[in-house]
Figure 1 (cartoon, rainbow, N blue to C red):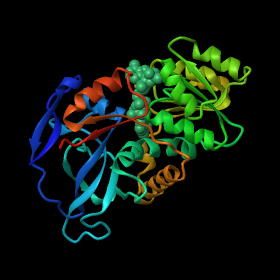
Figure 2: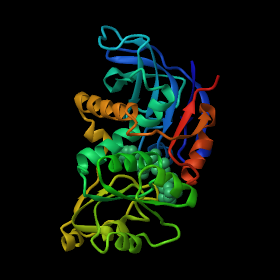
Figure 3: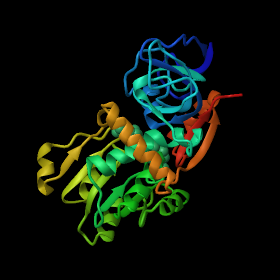
Figure 4: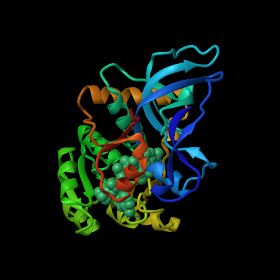
Length: 325
Ligand SMILES: NC(=O)c1ccc[n+]([C@@H]2O[C@H](COP(=O)([O-])OP(=O)(O)OC[C@H]3O[C@@H](n4cnc5c(N)ncnc54)[C@H](OP(=O)(O)O)[C@@H]3O)[C@@H](O)[C@H]2O)c1
């Protein structure tokens, strides 16, 4: 038996229950991992609320770092004692220990501690997908990043800056604006106080931006389209404020806009893609290109509090849950 955060009914943070679960032994192709640090991601909120479907009851969570405590029969390549992390659509990381397909775990280099690995793997690979694969950021580009002080946003701004882009970030408060500026935003817009479309127009002297990375969704989507330069890239990769309203395809003709809705799971579809993305993220952390902000840690048993803070826009950077005791 291990302790875990379970969901029996969909709803607010209060549906998260701290319970004993039986996890059993790893079968062929599986590993058992004792989690040392667990990453909280906005996708966990979508599953808890039911915006993304999952069969009830389930253990929440898609990211953690820990130690391998068991391997399935005949497994090679991963052994007991290995330090690993994972960020995949294999649910169940809000637990002291869990069983996973061996194909989703990645080795963690010795220079990266558990908390950092759990704070950066999913969010860093998302940033990697966005700046290196969906739209390749290069010197001379101007990029707009919404929720720039968030978990993904913080890493995305640092990475885009390191690639030579002019980075414009939006945030909801002065405090978050300071974080975004430290994370490489050349211009920060407080979108709860000013109209970000007007501000971007001023900053770019009417030219618009080459790419918008929009994870906020409903509240920003239309404005994001308006901020784009001709032949710009609209990358809608999340919906923290709700799903955006659909746009008629003909609206994209005005500026010949490229529109994509990427998913990390699709970009990391093969083992090689997963390993390459994880390697690039960890090496950027080791070399200092990415500074991982672990601004909030909570005991695993208090995951509900972490969720309330995340949804309440009270957090910045990454949130990590630490197994109790
Ligand atoms: N497509 C993919 O494969 C993929 C992978 C990973 C993450 N994502 C997406 O990336 C986004 C960021 O994830 P994260 O875990 O790093 O979360 P996060 O950005 O740390 O938290 C969400 C942020 O969104 C902003 N926000 C704006 N309106 C909001 C609202 N109505 N309710 C809550 N937040 C609101 C808030 O920043 P301000 O207070 O500054 O507005 C908040 O801090 C999420 O939308 C997630 O789904 C997508």
